[in-house]
Length: 269
Image 1 (tube, rainbow, N blue to C red):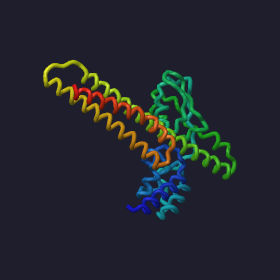
Image 2 (image 1 turned 90 degrees about the vertical axis):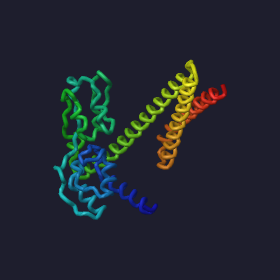
Image 3 (image 1 turned 60 degrees about the vertical axis):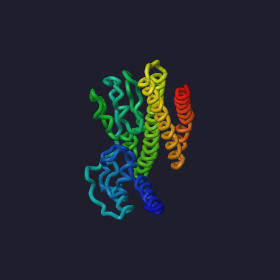
Image 4 (image 1 turned 120 degrees about the vertical axis):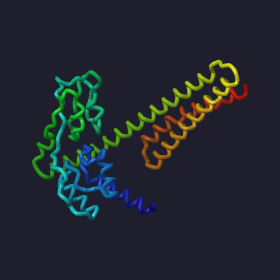
């Protein structure tokens, strides 16, 4: 695929994504509206978005040059999740399921939905072990009296839904990177302790050398991963991801330096 083809496909994905409702509900079979836009650009059916309705199908047909097929599932009006707080046991499962971080709460404490940020995706309903979440017509949608007001509400919901979905994905990616770094750090420390433990005979010495070499390799991999994440963030002009990678870089470099030093000292002794 040439650079021109890649650019054209990216522009098509952006245009498709702009027409989607950004509920991030997964009813299309994809884990969010952006992934569905990418799938449509690759040939996926354009009629799998119930929250978008037939109007979205028509717009996607115009963008892709495909027939405007009927919706695969019934159209869905805007909804909002409502937690019956007196029945909530504070399990946090709905918080983990929400694709736009629109639920507040903590373990063993009551949860509540931020109504203005809820997209009505329904993903919080199934995980609830006590069935205390209802889906209701969204008050802002119900209050809209004209097509213009309804369109304005849908535009606001889409903009906020996209931003919060992307922010959540960045947060999850950052937390995953931090966990990997912490695991690498513990592994290196364990191997260094193992290598510094007293041993006897040539077999024990060879084992310690292998442990130190493995620690160096693990540290090198951790540093390489952070550097790749930094390069990727800069290519995507993702300032938050770049800042996260830059913050992790000194720690990765320190771990590598320490593991190399431990190996060097052992080899000289």
